[in-house]
Each structure stands twice: as structure tokens, then as C-alpha cells.
Image (cartoon, rainbow, N blue to C red; front, side):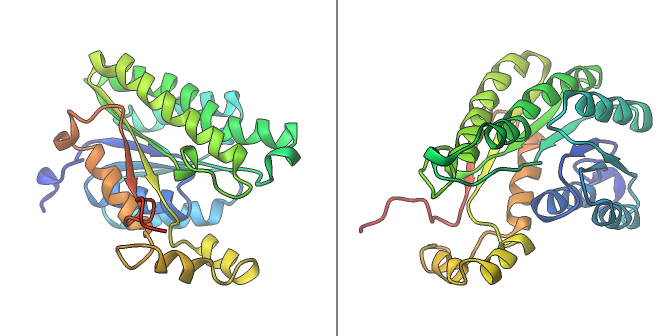
Length: 260
């Protein structure tokens, strides 16, 4: 495609937690489709800079911004930087996530608050900052990354599951309230995704987790970060304009009810 025919040419995107994994794949996909991209990280700057270098190699602008989205002041600073350095915002992908995995009866206040703040509260207050920037540019798209744990009971997942359920509720409310401003809001819920973090867990924790998941996935393989990125890119495109407040499951069929 020529630059003028790319779907996100002259668009500016912000992807939180985009130094690695799913966030990295989303950032690279949006850049490949023409967007200039803001890369956000909290702790590890080197991977974020590597993603930015790949984006610049595509001929796009890339900005790396450190921000801990569990802190309101960092969210404010992040969006102020985006406005000042990039000149606006058209696409916001709420990808950054964290959590303390414990059984419900062992969950601690600190772990609960941290998980809720990063996974749910950050989405609401980041969307509040993103919306006016998008309105100035005639509209935009917001996509949140959720998890099947929002509706299914997973081992030691109560804090993350509850936070993702809240995030999905926020998606619906924001979709309705921002619709008059031509801002499209949806969520994507991937199952186990084949990332370096999952491979590390398989090596250090449960070595059977990957083959067990593959065996139970009708599609015959795990979801990749690129699978998720493709759906996110679609939801940010004009083709998805009439999809509002939905949670799109990307799981190869693993969460479908099947005979026991």
C-alpha cells in the first residue's frame, strides 16, 4: 500500500503497556497500517525503545513515554505528553495489565487495589483524557484488552477476573456515552496468548500448560499476539464503526461449551 491508502495514515495511536507481548504486536500492527504510535512502559524502557525503533523503520513517528497507569498523576502526564509531542490522538488501546494471583480467601487489600487500579480504574480515567483529544479530531476509537476470566472462574484469578469484568462494564458505558462524539469503544478478550511470559511460566511453573491448552483449542494452536492485534486494528477501522460496546473473544474456540 502507498502511504495515502494505509487505513491509519495520519492517525495517532497510544497503546499502554506496549513494550512487549500483546501491546507490542498491537503497536506494530497499527504502525504497519499507517499510524504514528505512542509506546508506553512502566518499568522496562529498553524493550519499549526497540519497539519504537521498529516503528520508525516503517517510516512512522514513535514516542516512548514512561507512565505507571495505576497513578492518576501519571495518566495525566501521559496524555499531556501525547498532546504536546504528537499533536492529538485518534486511537487509544488500553492494554497495560497486572495482577496478584491468589485464591479469593487469601487475597490481600494491597493486591486487590493494585490490580483494580491498573486494570480497571486506569481505563476509565485514561478514556476521560483520550475523549476530548479525539473529539477535537472528529472522533476516534478506543479498545480495551480484557480476559475470559471476566466471565469464567479461573484458578487464583479473582482480582484480575473482577477487574476485567469491571473493564468490560466500563466498555459498555463508554460506548454509549461517547457514541455521539463518533468515538467507537469496544474490548477484545483473548485466551492464553503465546508470549514470552507464558513460555517462561511453562518452564518455571506448569510445563503442561501450553500443550494442555493446545489440546483443548478447536483451532489447534494458541492465540498469538498478532491474532489479537489484527482484531484490535479492525475495531479501530471504519469497517467496525457500527460495532459498539462489544467484547470480541479471540480464543480459537477454547471457551466454547463442549461435551465433557
